[in-house]
Amino acid sequence: MVVGIDNGATKNNATVLDGSGRFLVGRMYEVPSRVNEGPTAAIEAMAQTMDLVLHDAAIGRSQVVAVGLDTPGRASANGVISSRGATNFAQPEWWGYDVRAGLEARIGLPVVYNNDGNAAALYAHHVHFGADAARHASVSAIVGTGLGGGVIEGGVAIRGAAGQAGEVGHIHLQTEGLLADGQPMPTCACGNSADVESIASLTGIVRNLLPYWLTRHPDHPLAAMPIGQAASEVRAYGVKGDEMALAVFAQQAMALGRLFTIAANFTDPSAYFVGGGVVEAAPHFRDWFLDQVRVHTALREEQAAVAVFALVPDLDMAGARGSALAALASVAP
Image 1 (cartoon, rainbow, N blue to C red):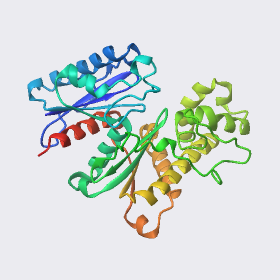
Image 2 (cartoon, rainbow, N blue to C red):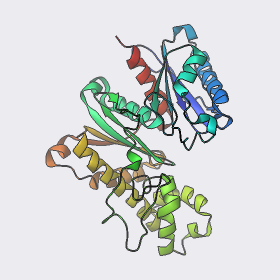
Image 3 (spheres, one colour):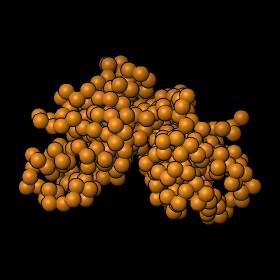
């Protein structure tokens, strides 16, 4: 047996996977992550999450041979948090902290680390391709507070020398034809301008997209709300076919299409996956959004004939399940 733990800003989730590749847990196990209390409390919360899911699955810890862990934020390929910190690891005691080794020491089991984007991308890849996963490549973009993602080659997440592979959110985009007339150049919290995250993320909506589109639609109901609240509600308007909201999401879809166009020329993947809040929207809206991404992905004729576009499945559980898959691969003969 292996366990997968998905660590987040506010909660942890976990799952159990057996040696045949069968998940023994079919629901979320949400435990406060306690990351704001520092490493000691957070590591303890991860261990408690593992114990909870093992108890409910009626699995003894002695049956577990490895644990997969994913976290958000910038970290090395082996789970050392950036020396400059990260959004979810803001306290100085996190800077340069080896979260993988910390959990390994606490539970006494081998721990395999991935960032959360890689874990979700790995799960999407394996669900889609199944037994053929090792013969395919894919690229995932996951729209959340930021823009996460992952590159899978041969069924394995590409992490890179410093763990930064698959950080698709900070790839620069050409803005000609992407921005509307008079629309300011979008900026990202990382310091870049016109990267994917500055457009295709909730932060991008708050910082860049919605402030501009509300100037074009000053009488819109969202104009009377604080910008953060308006950003959280714009998707509901998009689902209802609201003109301004659809303009916001059309720009996000175009940005993702341009990202996938870049990926097509680097990795030529078999599949392009989109995840995030859009996956949780009404089917007609998420289908429209995915179609817009496809339309704005410029593929050669040969690529278009074989590539598929799909949504990341089971998004709430994708991180934990992808982490478990990575752990299982680490102990497979």
